[in-house]
Amino acid sequence: MSLRQSIERPFRLHAPVSEDERERFTRSMMLVEEARIRFNSYTRYREEPSATDWRAARRELLSFVDTFLSADHIDRSLYERRFILTTLTSRDRENPTSFMKQFMSGEARGQSIADAIVAFRSFVEDSDLRFATNQGSLSFEELGRIVPRQQVAPIQFDIVNGRIAVVKQAPKTLDADRANIQSALEHIKGSGERLIKNLEQSNCDRRLLESVQELQSQLLSEGNIVKIGLTNMACGVMGATFQAELPDAVSAMFHSYSSSVSLYVAQFPEWEQFTQKAYAIELDEDDVAEIDASVGAVIDELAASPYLADPEVPKTIAFVRRFLTVPGASGKRAAFAMIRTIENLVSSIIRHSLAFVAKTAEKTVDAASTAASKVIVGLLGIALMSASGVGPAAVRAGAPWVKQAAEIVQKQIEKMAE
Image (cartoon, rainbow, N blue to C red; front, side, top):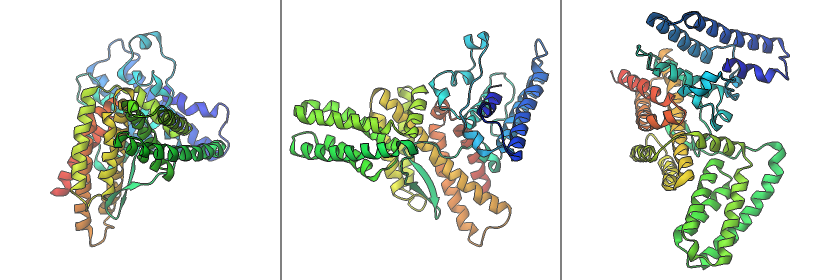
């Protein structure tokens, strides 16, 4: 019902115009309605469904999810629409499932239909009905159904000539805000230069100066807005730590600069989307420590494999990892940023590898396929290490696909090694 409402809502004010648009809309709605009727036929009309009925009902749901994610008639942009949880019954509000809970908080404002579908599939697979699940039943070739494209994070990646590379990202702005944002940026650049000069002339800790210089460098290059926001948070913590070392005038300049950057990043939809999701996740200190350790291992592996990754990759991931030491709510955002970064790393590798595996199946690869295959196995090894390390935390961060992808990638590596 929630999925149907999420699909239908945009058309309440704007009905489908073209014949093709109407056909796509109708078939999408019919697919959802058919799944609801099929599920109800096993469950709603029985006081206590049998174990056989439950197994059949769960198979219907899993089949629906896979069909929905791969259906040709569904507009790809539909998956990016916001998922809207329908009005719950009093019983559901009092005793919500773990799936419903993640959409009953601020997270609901940021989750897409694709996010919800993947999370729902994991929920059905992991349900405690004590029946066999289909976890890992997808083949590697079908992995594209559950692995989302890269998401809002401090870093995005690409595979260039067989090596992982960092994608340079300019901030995305709304047309109506562009002029104001540019004016604000020019002001911040100027105030940042003055602050750096004053810090250089003061006796402040060099770490504070380096923190401001790094933030200023990112602003000058107009880089990734999430990375800028995180750097500013860490810079603010650093400023509070060494405030006693600063003259009052310089301290005031620092706070004004940091506040201006905060207002600047708040103008970007990507930062708003990122912070909303970061606030909604539930991670504790043990999770952060686990993420820190696993990411450290990934960085070491990337640094030791220059034939698989550009040197900028481990260096940039290591920069984001530093934010995990920031205390409080800022640390929570940093942990979410690190998970999203690793998700993007895994997604980029898997999607690149899927294309190679497809060519292999079609026998369209060239004579260098043996060497290329070794590179793919190496990249998949990086993806497996990354996904396995952050998998448990990623589930709590709303990305259950990471854990499932790790299992499927493991099987693919074993298959290619035969």
